[in-house]
Image (cartoon, rainbow, N blue to C red; front, side, top):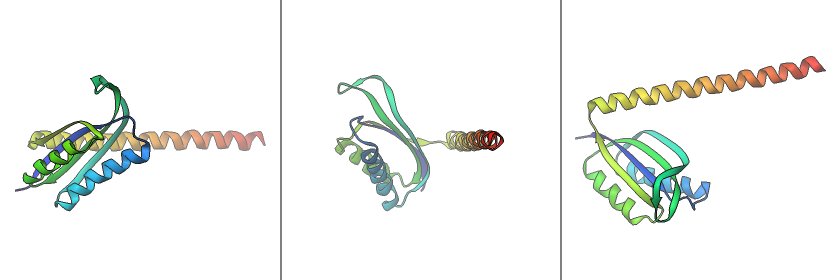
Length: 135
């Protein structure tokens, strides 16, 4: 039986951008090797923690939504516990309402990203137009 899950984990802030992406790819690879499909991925980047964890006040936040077998969660949690780069993690199953909400959130974020990209293109087009007028 395939369930929908969401995992949020925080990576230590001492990692470089490449090391952070490598750690995320490791967990994504672990999921796909076990037969899960990754529905959505959010990299929030370096954020301030609500409280210090292991004398660290910031961390790289990552959220993954995936669909897979229930036995996969135990394996994933074991890998989270063993990896020194992970300072906190949480894996939970999405019920049908949470899954619908998550799908709406993903769609809304994609639309906002499209609007921001469009705004940036318009700004750059205006700047280039102004440069041409000056010449």
